[in-house]
Length: 493
Image (cartoon, rainbow, N blue to C red; front, side):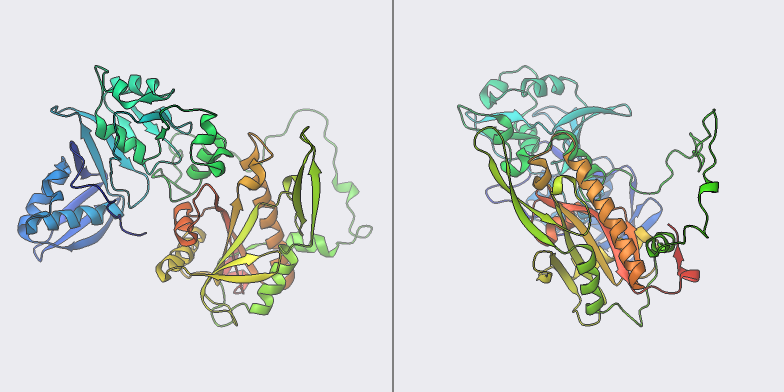
């Protein structure tokens, strides 16, 4: 991830903000000047620092005012600033906010992306602000937290009076009216929420639909639950536990592999299936032979010709056409395509992006597959970003080596949400599942190896493509290449 950058027009740190280590982090100063961070049983160095800086860093356990080192006037200030920035890039710190001239903390700010840095957007008394329709309050253990799928940070509310201020902001209000409230939490608080898209500003005399005024047309197409599910079921925009962690193993027994039988009369179907009458078709063989490949032959990478044939068989546009959608006012002409796999309403929102590590005839890099022209377009991504995609896929597969090709299945979300309400994102996921099975069957038919990957980094994809995560983003991944022998390296499913 790129390092946080200070925004223009802001000097120093927002008043009242402190920074501290997250609860799962500990720092250990070594005799040689290194400071070691210990996180969930893992240790790594965050750099070499002077003894004075190491001593001052102890205050990060309870909280250090951001303003105390923001000026960077002394060497110790610069060193502490560097240490905090490095920890922030890893998502290992959180922030606290106090009201002006008070000591009690009113909120704790927990980063949800690795390089979050608290910035309080400036507001004037005449500004009109309103709560985002994507913002929500919920109970998390014994805490009350304010979240949004658009926010780079989560806000733990430690002062219950803040909830009443948030309730006022369900309708647009001028800042000067809020400042008259007895429990006004301060301008820094509002600026932090504004920077995280939990609040947004309006014209002094707002008119029209608030949905269309927040974030533009691309965001207006999203329903609340769809955007929340997209960000929370992917990697990159939240700090929640993720993956096969068996969090409920000690409390709930695992469900049996087979559902217990229903009572009642049973009809045995085996007698209707006879190999001598119904010989196994090629399609049935493909279904039975389909499997996941998690190790690939480094000596014989997939070739560009094989990749071209694979994409042609699975994802190429076969036909384009238009239909008129009658909306009662003369109708709208809508374009459609036909492809080898089905899609809800023939919407076909899915796009393919290829992170290529090894392909004979194709340079290592990041590519977009143009399904209409059956062509690959190179995308200028940084080497470390490409490596992050490949390494992330290997980790998700439980493999020690990166796949030859990682195909990210991304979606142009507005393609389906323009038509469908409440179920648009579920249709995207159904399409991704259908395409994944198509990939498996084609790979099996061609003697290649493939493996579905159930996670992708939303924020990393946005960084590599420059596309906002709510406009186009990853919903699945698929590793492709020439597999090793199945008996040693491949498992089902």
